[in-house]
Length: 120
Image 1 (tube, rainbow, N blue to C red):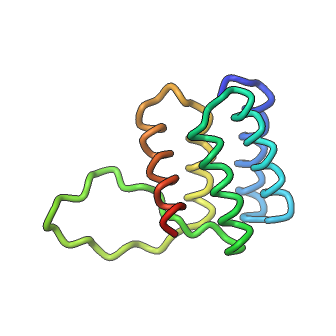
Image 2 (spheres, helix red, strand yellow; image 1 turned 90 degrees about the horizontal axis):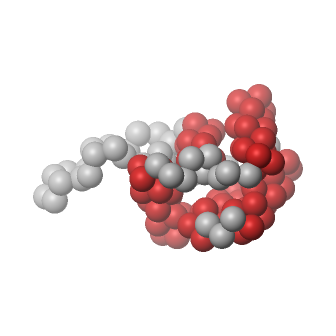
């Protein structure tokens, strides 16, 4: 996102996650505020991902979506045991993706998060 206030809010969210983990009291409000910046900048993917994220956290009191894999899964290959999800690290990664929307990989990972949140 290009808005300086949005960047500051992203940094605050990341810092809060480092300090207190997933503190739903402030986290959900911060994500909703970040979503308003995405609405202003008309970035529908980010708007949707942020809404799905805070709704997921409200329902589960945690963030249970793993960080997207780097390599595509080959057809026919067995899916390796899913490593345990680190809710804080995965959420920090998701939030940090919203900082640079010019990066194709960030957009791709945001789409994977969107799909995972919709399936959950």
